[in-house]
Length: 202
Image 1: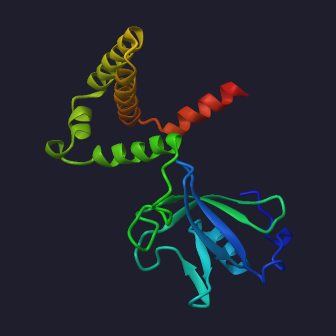
Image 2: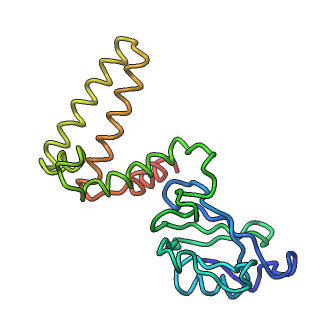
């Protein structure tokens, strides 16, 4: 993490900087916290998001009682050095109300939802086959999963060729789902695929 804490503007807000917490995979904003120098130092040292609790007047590591911690991927300062962006991978719900984030009324980002779905697929892969189509499909082996991608790709192509708009939507959803299952079965992450796309754009 290329962050220089001593160059941040700690004086502007009385020693506290707002810290926007973002899911490192989906890009969704999860919560807002505040960090002082000690909280930031603890976060950087332990790779767990830690804040200054204004109500408790002490350091507070997210999830210290619930177990729903935030594994820190990176921390960035804004252009003025008075706000932090903390990219994390959450272990469980982020909000104390049990929701995935503290903004339940905000719709999921279209691309971000794919990362969320990939996470669900990863969990379902470990479920009993009787309880999960994903687990049953993966249990049949990667060749069967790959075959499903081919089938869904053909169905999408036919829907597009016939001009059936709703069918294009439905078949695209099926194809994206089975593509994510293929990635799971192949040990490849969605982040690796998007990184490949980004490198091609450059």
